[in-house]
Amino acid sequence: MPSELNQLLKIKHPIIQAPMFLVSNTAMVIEAMKCGIAGCIPALNYRTLEELRAAARELKAARQEGGSYGFNLIVNKSNVKYKGQLKVLCEEGCDFIITSLGSPEETIKQAHVAGIKVFCDVVDLKFAKKVEGLGADAVIAVNNEAGGHRGGFSPEELIKLLVDNCNIPVISAGGVGCKEDIDRMLSYGAAGVSVGSPFIASTEANVTEEYKQACVDYGADDIVMTERISGTPCTVINTPYVQKIGTKATWLENVLNKNKKLKKWVKMVRFSIGMKATEKAAKKATYKTVWVAGPSIEYTKDILPTKEIIAKLIN
Image (cartoon, rainbow, N blue to C red):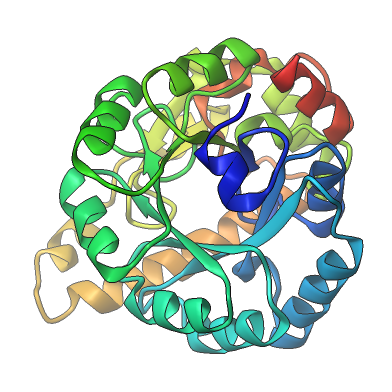
């Protein structure tokens, strides 16, 4: 399946193992590289800059021909570690950085000096053109079938819109759970795909067996949007606990979000609280289960090694 993404990252198959908060780790990415695809880890999966540096060095040492590795950076003010994380990645090196939730301008400048490619999450044409103007190497087109924070356009609408109006590669994110889905995204003009949710139920993922099994037991119809995690609508599995607490922001959060002076701080606090709650659910069995996932778990029927999940995607 040759494509622009193969050429950009020198990989065998046009697939990025998407960065997933708490789920992605070096073991998964190393297996991804062995299978000829790219793997990516959120920098926020590491509590300290020293741990991030160690992960970057581990992946560099394990780098496989035909595969590549990168990291995801949250580039807005909610991530107080951003500048330190960018500095570490530029010092240690990686194949690419994916930026999310903010302006990638500084990341692009510094990463390019270090020889690192930068791909930017976008949900519409306006932001895609903006990051293209800043020098992004590609855009990650986050559609309305993505897991986590998703966009508003269907895969076909968004890919064709960006391909027709941008001069850089478009990588589709969302709605991929099998090879047929990959072929469909490529037929719309995508240079490759970013795939996340199918890898939650991998043996390498260091989340609870309950979280993995939930991806097996639940399907596309069980995915709902909630405003209760980060303040921004996010897709989660509709467990009994999610049904109990509801998916809408509280009246107090709605009032505070309308206050221009307080809005930024409210979002930062909501983001911090939500991430801690998500981490507890991912790392410890509890009745308070808030498990982030996308509708592509429809194709997850077993907990499998990463290499077998990839084999199902490419064969």
